[in-house]
Length: 185
Image 1 (cartoon, rainbow, N blue to C red):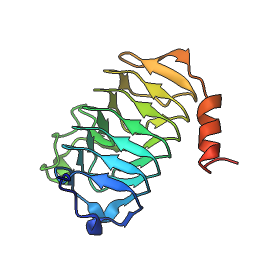
Image 2: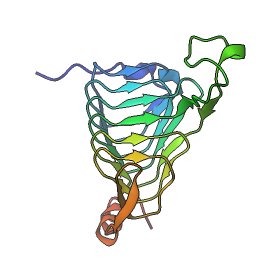
Image 3: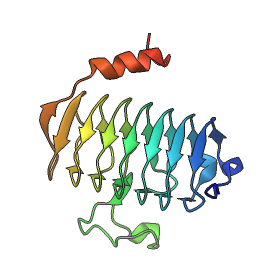
C-alpha cells in the first residue's frame, strides 16, 4: 500500500517524480516551487517560501522557519538530514523589544530575515542548525549536530559549534555523475 501524499496542486510549481508525505506541513504552499526527483519525508515543517531544484531529499522532522518573508533555496543534488533546523528569520534577542511573532510590530525586537541557500551538491547532516543568511557553497557538507552561523567554502566538510572547516571533499566523481545526468556541460 502506497503512503498517503501531500496535495501537490496547492504548490506554486511541482516537477515529476516527487514524493511529499501527507504528514508534511507547508504553511505557504503558494510560495513553494519544487523540481523533479524530490522526496520530502514525514514530519517536515516549512513556513517559508522555498525554491527546490532536482534530486533533493529532505529527511523526517526537518524544520524550516522564517515566515512569509523567509526563503529557502536548494540547488540540485542537495539534502537535509533528519531533525535539522533551518532558521530563515529570527528575533535578535538584544532587548530592543519583545520577542515573538504575536507581538505588535512597534513593540518587537529587531527581526533578522535572510535566505538560506544550499548550492548544488551541498548536504546538511542530522540535527544541524543553519542560521539566517547562510549560503552553503557548492559541494559543502555540514556534519551532524553542527551550528552554521556563517557561509561556507565550496567542497569543504564543516563540523562543530560553531561549524568550522575540517576537511576537503572530493568533487570530481560527483561532477562527472551530474554531467552524465545532463546537469553540467
